[in-house]
Length: 249
Length: 249
Image 1 (tube, chains in turn orange, yellow):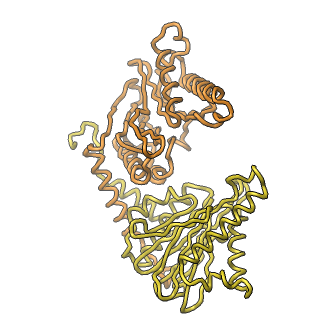
Image 2 (image 1 turned 180 degrees about the horizontal axis):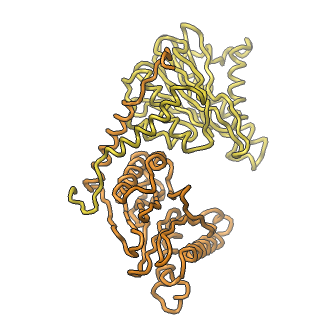
Image 3 (image 1 turned 90 degrees about the vertical axis):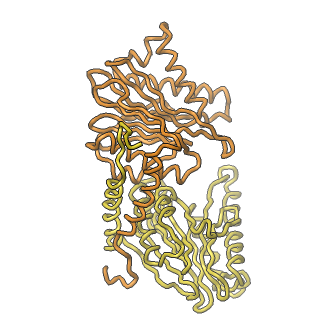
């Protein structure tokens, strides 16, 4: 499994992903699920992936090669004119990869080898944009109503994002929020694991404003993890008490 | 979908279930998922169910009939000598019901019509016990290491239980904790819905210590729901801040 979140703020985009892949619980590995490309001063594009690892690595490699091989430059993420066209190209590559692997495997391939992606980025002259791309190659875009996307093991970490997200928040608070959301997920589900990858895309900057790999020994993450347990318990203790005689009702 | 939690405390057992059933999002209904039987002064037994509604209703009806029809009394939940035997009997009835419906439906029935259950109760002379029963008819029992069971849509409401549960807590705090856990689930998932059913089984009492249907208009639940959002936000605000220059790291 996997957990990735992409979040749209007024100031830009914040992305976080875990790095655990597993095939059963006895075969776990660390693989990066977040990639980015940028042309300084002109564009920055990042992808986070969840699903079949062979599929997602293949998609990333194909996209990567096109940014380098001159004969394929017409579909390169580095040259497509809008984020919408980038999303369409990533979707096309994903759909083809999934379909080819499935069809090679006949009936037993049905519904397997799928993957989903979160695409985030900005191209000069346009706003930062955030997309969720499905294995079928189609995609949706974030809006003010739904300003963040999650893929993978999304449920444990969702309640805190729903409650604490605010589009005007600064990057520091957004990173804090994502760390809390990841901590809740890590504590509940073995298939999501440290280290985490963090990328901050500041509006109109066209290069990573901040990127970091958060290891198990990271002092801030450890502090959040222990403080959040305490904070939750004391928030819980501070709630009005239930009474069986319902005199308060 | 469904959300039910059964929790073992030093003082007894606390159970809560939602009441929403759905077949698609355009066909939702209210059905009770919690049932209990008791022989005053001798035993109290409660079942919560998740999964295919036709299956769970059939199981409950069969168990219910046996408590009333004299010719079947040998397998009646009211007369079996231990909670272990009650769990085995419920498991047997569940497995048979699932298998019969599946086999009547041939290949298209494979893997459908399943259900899971949480069984809680106490029989005089023995400790209160809590079981989770699988569609295959086998079951596991709660212990100090895993003192609560959830069935249905379990993920959203799990982080707070993991952090705030304490076996020495009183019933009032346990009810408060379950309400918070249900509130997180209700806010995130349309397939879990009000009203909720609450049952408190006090050790050595052999009758419901407290039972209540919590409606959407319940003033305490509304208070918890609004206070918890605020409490979470201020717990979040109170956490140490992230800093990009990591001077604090």
